[in-house]
Image 1 (cartoon, rainbow, N blue to C red):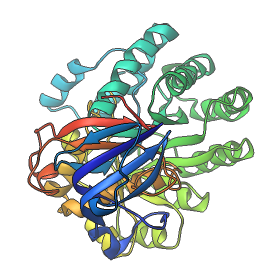
Image 2: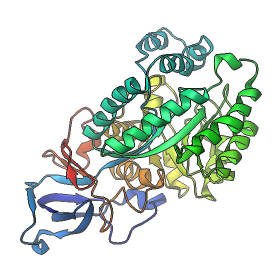
Image 3: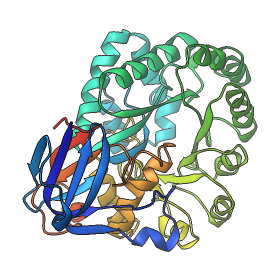
Image 4: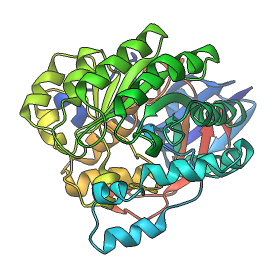
Length: 411
């Protein structure tokens, strides 16, 4: 099956040779072809170029009518398997309570853990399925989905089995992430070390036995897990083939970046309070700094200093952090807008951070995140827009006309 998309106004983020990521000054460059075609064969990109070189026929021909085509967004940090919403905590935030204060009162992650425990696997799947298609509708084609609202072996496995079902039944490319170390459950209050023991001795082996996780994650931050505890869990996870991805520096300068780099984390995420020390540490690593501006927006936290990271030559990624407590949105276009408005990224930098670098933060650089021959045909066609800069500029405007994932139009 071949699909020819013709008369593309601008074909954006094209690569003749696949790059692992873009970093530093290169993040300001967005390769594109004006008046282009794109040929898809089965589920991969077969060819692309100027319309003057387009093939004459294909099994399916789509006229883009001057619209733009971009690679689908790659969202490297989400928590979309959860039960219910937490808008009552939204009111608590409005009334002045901090994220930490809500957590200490039994809210936050612990609240979601209780709700998840009381919800069936089928119920969780149905709720998460709606969120997957919501994300796809915004132009997302690949995502990291974490556990972490289970906080017991049984419930963490339940979450990861739901994630596996989503992998098997939706067109979204999904990377499963075991986050048993998201918080300390109420039953282990005052016995945090014992909960770490449970993760290392029982949860990780059980997750590995069913092959449920690509990654292991830890919330290494003030009031959550220490650097030493994080290191121990990452070491055990590595023995079972799970590469680290770390929550770091959301609430304080936590040491999470350093421990992530030490254990070759694929990415370190959040980074709202990152300093020059962390940036220097990342410069000598293979770890992608991933910033979550939606969290800063919703919680009133500082925005990550992406400009300093880019100036230091780093490959910055952006992700949504879609979750019920701190970022109830998976709209990567809005993430781009927040990055441009509050972090002063240019539109080109924001697009690089949500496509090619987002793919790198998922371990998918060879298959996703750009328009390149041999990569998955994951892309979206925009509505008629005047320029690429319009995408983050018009921060509430729906610009997605159609979405193709794995070579098929799903929207």
